[in-house]
Structure formats: C-alpha cells, structure tokens
Image (cartoon, rainbow, N blue to C red; front, side):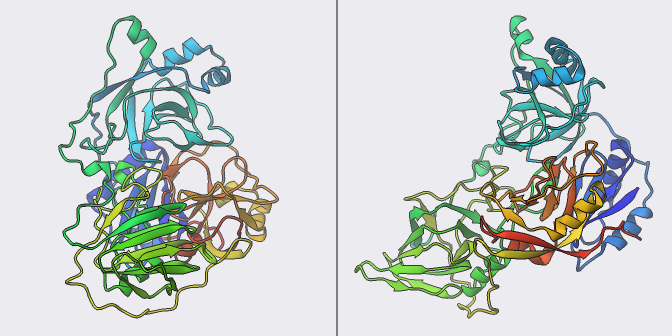
Length: 537
C-alpha cells in the first residue's frame, strides 16, 4: 500500500488490485475517519478528500494502517442487459490492435458478464470489470473533445457506457439507447456497484426477434431531477433577464458527498467571490448566486431589489426607466427600483462575475444543491433572455453589510499568473527534465477552456518516463492532468471524478479561486510548494 500526495486537502491510497481497493473502501465506509469529506474509489486507488483543519494526510495514513482488512464479503447484485449497436468509430482499429476481425471483437465483448466495480468520471459512468480477458487496449493518445451519450467503450481492462456527451479518451465500439443516468429515476444511475452487466449485440437480437432489454429502476413521481431554473416566487420582487451574456449559470457552494454516484461537487469557481456577494446583502454566504462569464448580462428589476456584484472587475451600469444611466460600484450593495436595468460590461480583470440578490435566488435543488454542473448536466439550465428569476424573502436577513475585506487582484488576458502547486500523485511518471520544465515553463490558457478545466499549451510538452496505461483513478479539484500529448489540463469545479491520465501536480487550495478567474490568453506559471515524496505516517 502506497500513500501519495495529491494536494493540501487530499491524498491517494494506491493498492495492489481492485479487490484490495474495494476491501479498504468498505472498511473506510464502515468507520469514516474524522475530517474525511469524500471517498473516490477507482481501479487500484482511493482518493481521500479531507478538511485540513480537522485532520492531515499523515493522520489518515496512521488510521488506515490500523484497520483490519480482508473482512469484507462482496455479493454480486442483479443482472442488467444492455443492447448495443456495434458501429463505433474505433471498432475496426481496436480489432486490428487485438489481431482479430470485427465480428470476433463483437462476440468477445458481448459474450460474458461484467461486474460494476465503481462509478466515476461522470454521473452514471460505471467502470465494468470482467468480460473476455483478451480485451485490453490503450486509451486514445489524445482524448476526444466530445463523446456522444450512449457510446459503449473500452480502455485498459474496463468497459463502460458514456451517460452524457462528454470529453473522453476511451475506444468507441458502439452505442446504446438505454439511458445510464436519469434524474427522474431513483436512483438516477442505472448501474450500481456490485451489479452484473451483459452487453447484447442489437443486430443479432433484432434478427432473432428479441426486444431490447434493460432493467430500469422506478421513475420518480416528482420533477426534482429536471433542474428547474427557478421556483415560483412568493414575493412580488423578481428579476427579468434582458440579456444572458456569454454564459450565466446558477452556482452555490456545490453538492459535496455525492461521489458514490459519480457526481462531483461543481459549485462556484470563485467561492470567495460567491461568499462576499452574499455577505454584502446579509444573506447566508452559501446561498445561490449567478456566475456570469465575461460581460453582457442584463437584469431588469421587477419591484424594488438589492444586488451585489463581485468577482471580475469592470463597468457596471444601471439604467432607470427615465433613460438616464449611472455607474454602480462592484463589491457593494446596489439598490434598484422597479424597472431599473443593471448591465455587466466586459471585465477589465478576471473572467467571472457573481451576482447575489438580497433574499437569495429561489432555485430548485438537485441532489442537495442548486449548482449547475456543465459536465454532468445537473442543475438549472443556463440563463436565457426573457427568463424571470424569483427572489426569496429577505425578512429575516441580517442588515446590508459593508465589505469585510478588499477583493483580490485578478488577472487579464496576457498576464502571467503564478499558482502554488503540490507535486503528486504521479510526478514520478514523468522524466526529471519534464518535472523541471513543468515549473520553469509558462503555459498559456487556450480557448478550449471552460468550467471543466483550463486547457494549457506550452512551447515544450511534458515527457513521461513511465508510458504504460494508468488505471483510472480519482482526480481532485485543481488537479493538473497530462494526457499523452504532453499538454496539461488544470481541472476546475466541473471536472470528472476519475481519469486515466497521470496527474503531475495539484493547485493548492488557497489558489483555487484565482484559477477560476484566469481568462483565455493569460499565462500560468507553477510555484512548487514541496517536492514529490510519499506520505509518512
């Protein structure tokens, strides 16, 4: 058993194989150590996220070393059949890699049962083990930016079905029409750990006159999973969206504790700005806010309202009904009369602005949070023109407050931003030259960046000393993953829970908000806080 650093608030436990991993997971779940926030199991590892004010990596290692393992009995669950149309983009190439023809590949893939080992990467994405032992192929050297929902794929020793349109590097064999993730189903994920799965060739099944089959769970009777934008307001006050800008989403502190379903926390990328906006209005600091990228958002007050805008800097214009206009201040409470329109201009520094309203936005929660997860497609949809946003009752709020601290300085395009990082957990998979280059070289933020992560480009790619496939493992917020191209990706709030490319380092927790405000065209430079070394008990 190895204990590897991930960040200042997470560590990775590496084990011998999947059986030992599931054994340790069961022991940890039976007695969760104090301060542990999340457990993310994978093929040979468990990512442990913890509150660094309650515990430490060394204390957690000591706890794990003292556990009595080998006591868990794993019982196979019910069996699910999934019909597959074997017409995937990589079908012929995979057959060639294995030295067989396509019909034989289909026969092997659909010929045996699989077991659901764990869920991760995205909600409803189940890692399936077993099947034909010969079906072992590497991931693609460069992941696709979009893999269609329902794609049936293999990588390493695993098979899986992509539940939604997401980026991905697995080899695509075919597709299924059976939904893997449905928020109107209880539980939302079709496949749960311990279940057995059999893929069925849809062409053969149709020839035989069989109907597609899959064991679906019962649907929920409520519409909770639909991610309604905003609930009906009991107050007369509201906001009308006059223009939604480039992208405006509802965000809050995130939906922690859902890793068991393959759901990441999501939430506001700049948590400090979210809290400041709410505190300025006397709200609970965790209430939902609007996270708006760049400029262009226009909101019209229906009744008298009070707003606060934090995060990025830039023009903030209020236009009353009489046609006049005045400049409002960010990081301050702004009183609006009925009909006033507030317009967020293009940022001077930073990228994302946060808009809170006194009383809070009334938002339908999904899995305990109102945040929008763009990768998982959970939560309210992006704001659209003419949408009306309901506002809560501010009767029991605190008084409107003055700023309790100066907002941080934020970058603009072209600036160089220094982020502190902790090396690990897979620093030793890279050459010594690559590790040195990682910290010495500047990395530019490319236009392909979003809430999932910042895609970076450097003059020289990072070379690996270990080139074998990495079994999928948990990825933390701020993880800097390096695909085969050697150009890093810095994971942000909507990142997948697990991934199959090595993580060279992770952004320190005190710089996560700053990472969420770095615009396209800016440069990153990484400041190493500590060299890579295994965690000692």
